[in-house]
Amino acid sequence: MGLVTQTSTRPAGAEHATSPESASSPTGTDARPGNPPARPWVSRPSEAFTAESLRARLLGSVHSWRDYPPSLRLWFLVVPLLTAAAGGVLRFVRLEAPHKLVFDETYYVKDAYSYLISGYERSWPDKANDSFNAGNPALLLDSPEYVVHPPVGKWMIAAGMWIFGADNSFGWRFAAALTGTLSILLLALIALKLFRSLPLAAAAGLLLAVDGHHLVMSRTSLLDIFLMFWILAAFGALLMDRDDGRRRLAARLANAAAANGGLPTPAQLLSGPWLGIRWWRIAAGIFLGLAVGTKWSGLFFLAGFGILTVLWDLSARRVAGIRGWISGGVIKDGIPAFLSMVPVAALVYAVTWTGWFRSEDAYFRRWALSNPSAEWGWLPDSIRSLAHYHLEAYKFHQGLGSEHPYEASAWSWLLMGRPTSFFYESPERGTPGCDVDKCTSAILSVGNPMIWWAAAISLVVLLFWWAGRRDWRAGAVLAGVAAGYLPWFLYPERTMFYFYAVSFEPFLVLALVYCLGLVLGRTTDPPWRRRSGLYLVALFVAAAVLLAAFFYPVWAAEVIPYQEWRLRMWMPSWI
Image (tube, rainbow, N blue to C red; front, side):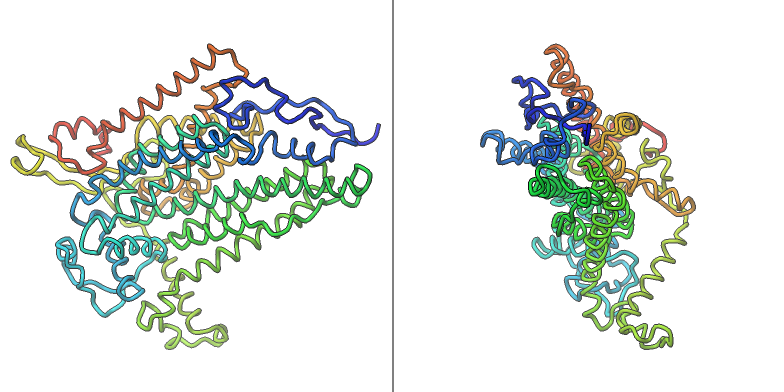
């Protein structure tokens, strides 16, 4: 009988009838979760290694965006931009309120200003916050300050202060608000790439835009919003690399088959071809280097995404018909993936410390001069000093176990058991916005309950779809959640906060949107089923938007009566 493969012999897109409703799927076929494309059982060997056949089984009905009508291509950009614009309004309006440093802004904003002045962190005198809040930040001392987080996020905050000034709260927070807004755009584009559905892409962007946790982190200058952005950018780059790698594999196998009478030689099928330099993977390495350069927890995403992208390549070689797909994938994909990401990320991370290297007085900058080493003396003093700095910072993080009123175990994050209060004041009657005896102005990093609690349930659904249906999209989303969430369980004694969860929050939204795709239904479903699914999805998104309007005052420090504030404290642990 010869070589037989489970490959479609029909033209791409022939599996499903096209209807007007399928316009929500840019490819014209139903690519939503839970609806794998139909395929016949077998195909002839002579047809299995044509370029068309290889692309069909490696990429399904995916095409280049250039193949679509200009009007549809326009919507691919307009829909994500509209969701980002909505999120941008929520983030930039009244961004300057409150006109004072809140929560950990007292560290990162002042460090960012120090970067603008000297390129490294310097110490501040007592009660420097009062002067900073009053618009007089020029109080830096000459001595260096010991800090335990890398520079990237603080440089990004400094960029906003450079543009709009360091003497106002809008300048302090501009970079965070812009980064949060851009992450909404990025998530909508990623959802479009994953699900190939404009309604689901719109839902993903809008749900992130109206989530309170992401909103609060976008309106305050802490490091975690920048960490989240670079992680999301790396994930998007790896999605692009997945398709690019499969196109290369299909093209090179097809060329090999064409040169050998329609079938690759046994030697060519033993491990498959090399795929060359993967530029999108290098881009992911750059983004992950910037993530680690913001917070060290980005290392977990570097490891998790590295494993994920190699597993995608192993699967591609197996589906393409390569016999030694494991060994071939490890050697020809795994090793290049490591070299494309880890050294690149390490180099980018080192570059982010340029200000420290160029300084004369930064913390531990001259440590190696007074601590000679017979074993490591061959290293430049600056490298040894930076390595010592990192060792001391690691010890600090490992020993961080002091009590805090808003510490929250990782077990409670998905249920929002203990959100962090960033700011709380009780304005007196007669102050602007307060017409009653007792008022409140607060910033609470509590998420939108509809989004977070539904996303927690969605993770269970994704586990079943990944294990039972082997849907790679479910696995990709779960990998993002796992890389950002599970490592925190390794440090049960460490002081942790709920706002750390923003690093993997976009993946929670993707998990929720995946399940909304199941509710939306397939393009081949009866019209009544499609309409019912669309109404339910629209109802859920509308309810999330209305709930966001209800909680917005306690996300954005609006002055409201105390009783209205209490009305929004749904759990005693939120107070």
